[in-house]
Structures are given as C-alpha cells and as structure tokens.
Amino acid sequence: MPRDILPLTIPDVSALAKALGRELTLIDGKPGHVQLLNMLTRAVGYRNFQHFRAATAAETRLGEPLSTPEPVDHALVERVAGHFDTEGQFLRWPSRYSHQCLALWVLWSRLQAGAVYSEFDISLAIRNNHRFGDHALIRRAMIDAGLIARTLDGREYRRVERKPPGEALALIRRIATRTPA
Image 1 (cartoon, rainbow, N blue to C red):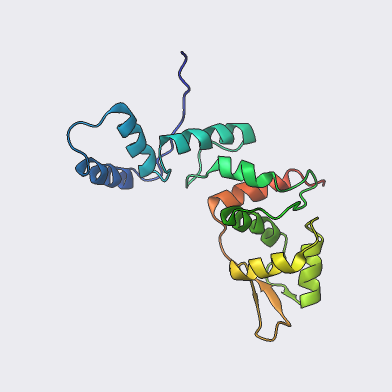
Image 2 (image 1 turned 180 degrees about the horizontal axis):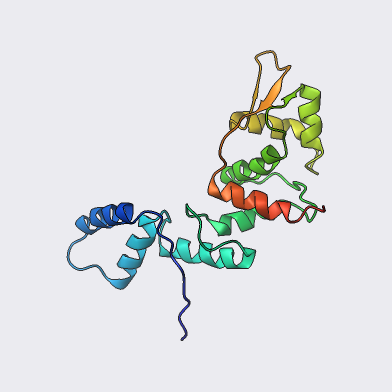
C-alpha cells in the first residue's frame, strides 16, 4: 500500500523540543509509532495525527499553501466555505458556534477599516453580503464576537481591528476567489 507523504512545517524547533520533552515524560517506556506521530503533530498545534492528516488533505483540495506560520485546520475552512455561495454570499447560519464565528470573519473583512457606520449603514452592509434575511442576528453575533463595536446608544458602529486567526484568513481568501471581479 503506497504511503502518503504529508509535509509537516515546524515554525519553532525549540518549542517542538520542549513539547516533545513534556509528552515523553507522561508515558511509560518507549513510545510506539502512532504515539510518536500524535506527539509530533500535537507539538506543532494539531489535536492529533488524524487531525493533521485531514487538514493536509483539505489543504491540498483547497489549493492552499502547504506551509503557514501557524497550523490551519483546512478541513474546517472547507466545511465553513460551504455556507457561502459561488458569489461569496453568506447562504445560511451555521448551527455550530465555531463555524458561526469563522464565517463572521468573512463579513468583517468586507467592512471598511476605520469607517464609522450608522445602524442603518451597518445593517445595509451586512444585508448586502448574505442571503438568509436576518441581518440583526449577524450584527449581534459580530458584536458578541468582538468583530464590531458600537456606542452605548447604538448610533455608531465600527469594525474592531484585529488580526484574524489562520482559519479565518484562509476562509477569507477562499471566499474572495469565488466573488466576481
């Protein structure tokens, strides 16, 4: 049976060595093959080897770069991208909270940095980027997630400038390739 070659990028060898040292102290005796695979992939940020394998397979399907500064769960990005249509419009509200938060980053990326929005304008911006008709749900979720902030009286809304996590950046890039120029 042919073996799949799965490239593993290690951003910090010192952190890898420390993580492996901690893991080796927790086991008795010599670790087995699967234990070593799990230790290595956990040390660079994956849950286990299966998570790493699934993320690498999704990475290949998505055509994303194989080396990033932080591990990206491309399987998650692929699942959340299914909530957007071919024009990059948000189609349906995900049932999982982690998918909701990740999908909101796409809408966050479409808000102008530094701009002050009225409630009408922020609602319009959200309405123009989704198809399921509940802009208030999305607006509240973006506030709860800390992606937009509003004044106490609700008159002004601003995008909160933050660095998106790796999965959010990959999803934003993925959805941006779907939108017509």
